[in-house]
Length: 115
Length: 111
Image (cartoon, rainbow over all chains, first blue to last red):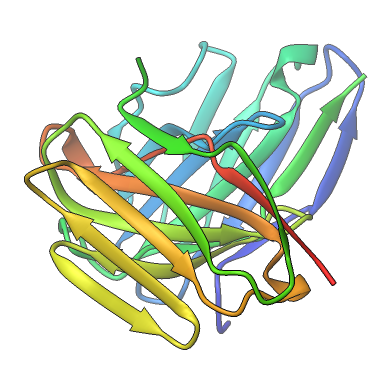
C-alpha cells in the first residue's frame, strides 16, 4: 500500500479481554515502531523492530503487552487482560532504514477504549 | 522535566494571523521532527531538521542546535491549519532511532 495501515481503527474492549492490533508498514521498510498516545498527551515509545528482530521493548508498560513481527513486515501488538488504563491511541510508524536521519511514516492509529 | 517541551499548549488564532509554536529539548539530537495530527489520530510528518531552516508552502521550521530550540511558523493561517502540532526528537542518546515527543500544541484557527 501507499502508506502505513493500521487495523482496526477503533476497538472497544471489555476489561479483561485480550486485543490484537495490526500494523502494515510501507513495503520494504526495515524499521517499525509502536507508540502509545494517551488522551491529550504526546505519543510514548513502546517497542521497536528492525526487520523481524525486536531490538527494544523497554517502553512496554507491563508483561500484558506483547509485540511481534515474525516475517519482518506486518506487526501485531497484543494486549492481554486489558485494563482501563490501556485506553489510548496506538500508533505504528515505519522507516525505510535504521538511521538517525530517516523519516518516519505514521499510520492512522488504533483507538482502544477499555470499558 | 520532559525531554521535549512545547509551548504554548493551546493556541487560538484568527484566520490570516502569523503563528509560532516553540519546542525546547534537553538531549543531544540527530534530528528534530515537526508533525501534524488531525482529529482521528493520524500523524503527518511536516519537517525533519538537523540544522538551519526549512520552508514548505506557508510553513517554516527553524532549529538552533546550540540553544536546543526549534520553532514552527505558519504564515497566513487558515482554519484548515487547525490541528495538534507535535515536536519530536531523534536522540543519539537512545537506541533504535526512536522518537521522543512533546505533548503537542493544539492550534485552532477561527475564520
